Image (cartoon, rainbow, N blue to C red; front, side):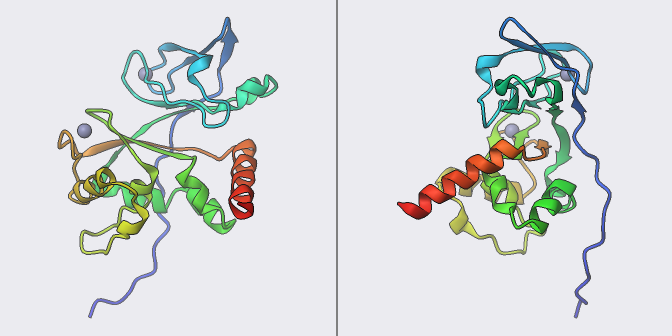
Length: 200
Ligand SMILES: [Zn+2]
Ligand SMILES: [Zn+2]
């Protein structure tokens, strides 16, 4: 019998970020945190709550831009995240040991991640995987998957393929992953939404 071992704390690399963001003529202007090339993104591509995920025009990495700048007062504290390459096989370890995920679990807020806070793309074909697929990726291929939490045949197909360590569309083995802090306006929007669900 294999003894059950307690999970060790593992230090993982975090997403690179920049706070050097300028706002001019309806554009957000900032250096890519990975290659330093200046990017310009139209503000209308960024949703006021959900933000946006444009691609670096130079290195092809993917950003997450939070939507909070729309209030005008928050552009000075706007933090833009760059995706980090993570092997599909190592995604689970990355996810489980991420300080944002651990903090959400301590606060009992981990369900919010299905709406906001995690983005995963194939590094090669840039297919975007759903958070429901990513957060349910088990560590070992022998672990049972909760397929009920997946809502479509596409998601089930993606889950099967990712469990084999490869993208279902191009066989690539590396994801570009962003895990961001959850801004306060996302938490309150999510709370309003859950109240509405309860009342209906
Ligand atoms: Zn770049
Ligand atoms: Zn792919």
